Image (cartoon, rainbow, N blue to C red):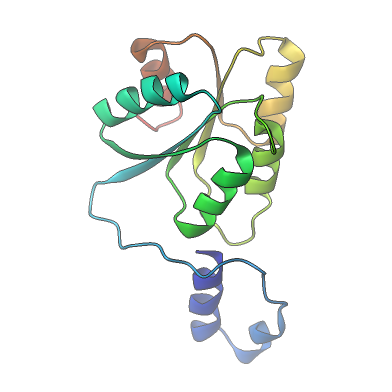
Length: 157
């Protein structure tokens, strides 16, 4: 997606823009969006949490994909940037804090809403998550009503 955005902006921009260094990202393979379809990405190393979260997001009208860690999630974001990301904090390979920092640092990408869904309930962790770029924070375990209310608060429900 990043490469596609760069190519589109280069095609319509003056030639001076062409001197920008190329990003080393895979070619975008994003399919056109159907009107009204919102994409959600659930990033959690727990299959059970992904299943529960999927049911909630699908009930809210999202088309959902999943990732087991931040590294896998970043690759999926390059392919097709979601509208909403539910993100665990503690995961192997790349944790949630590292993921959201990398996501917010992506140049030219649209910025999805990011909600940390984690057992980390310390005020310091909540502050770190929001400062890194998360839009909201939900403590596990959560239910449909709690997540729906949080998503409404950030305009993602």
